[in-house]
Image (tube, rainbow, N blue to C red; front, side, top):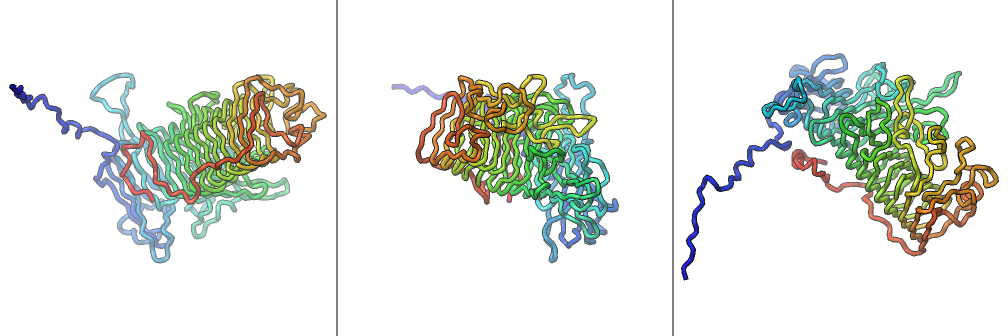
Length: 583
């Protein structure tokens, strides 16, 4: 039997793998040094900043004197690092520190400015030209893990902050056209140079601002070791004034990742930021803020991961800029993953477009969440003194211990964007960004436009829950309005004889589609709130359709501190893998 002879194809028609090698991707960062500056910190630590790729670099001390080869060994403090002429797809700034004999291995700086002056954009942005390229005036990578943001000047800050009303600017990082990956040590408001005054003792509110614009591609990732904020008070004949020392991370567009080992703050009586205190009559924003704001695109957050404890930490995604009128709640500004591995104390999450996975490694304590919906809400050790309000459903809530002194609500109309931020050019504005606590079921706000108190029940709610413990002095409600009349001014619940009806009273509006499916391991004990917030002590679940099953519940497995799992990249960050070592 004859065999067909194979015909050799012409070489010119063979696929050429070599053609793929000319592609330009983010991982092709320049390895060419364009500038390098070295110096010695006040306590003897040696540092070097190196800029790779297009651009130039300048570093000055407190008096404005540049660091040069001649004074590299003279102990001094960094005031401002200036980077100019960079190109987003190839430029990167790398900082290294060698610990001195008497040093702490930390080098503090007060300002880092990534200027947007690398190239001009096209005169006519609507003109399509294959040979034209978009001007990329940001920077791809800032990798300086042992450099810390702090107030290195001995003078009290005098520049008014443009971010929070009533604050002075203590320092910060600015990049008008963005940073794809920003990795540095973190922020410490308590750092004080020799001869200086700790910010908490200056008698005024100060803040550090990390203000990152919209990068040309990829989005923004921020990796720090820790963020430390503080607060104090001054008393005069006219009264007591609280002074907050805060940190604000303000990012335009998508935050791919925000990762920290810990977020610290002051929760002493009267000193905590007022966005966590619904009873506060005088608002004073404070703590650590992470804000993804809208600009040319809407705000969006991929991963927020705090490996250890988180205190006075507020996270929000907004459809519009904090400096513009509210765009209203939309389905766009979502928060995909939010995880705290350690203890929580005053943690807030505001997601107008919803949130997918929200988890707490050591309990959901003193937490406020206002979201359009939540797919998974998990806490290894249960929940204490927390408030969760969603407009749609909580698809899967799993608590590893008791639910105590908490409100969990689903199926309620909200104004989450307004709860997050309302801009005013004449005053400090409102919302949590300006220190105002979000409206919740026990502290509703009357809305003249809709003619009722917000949040108000609607028929689209549902909760599927598993609680490996008891429910104590808490309410889980779905699409139930305890005070439908709205006649009285909004305020806290009153006893059953008043017009402000508690849950379970016959005057409640119970909408027909709300449901609760729950499995509980312990008992219900609402004796402390019976007759005021609820009608009876043995009931805590309120909906048209309530199904409660008693039985053992397996606690969730949320990552707990110390959080040491390797850094996971999203699809938008694939090109960044292997660029640098993450501690």
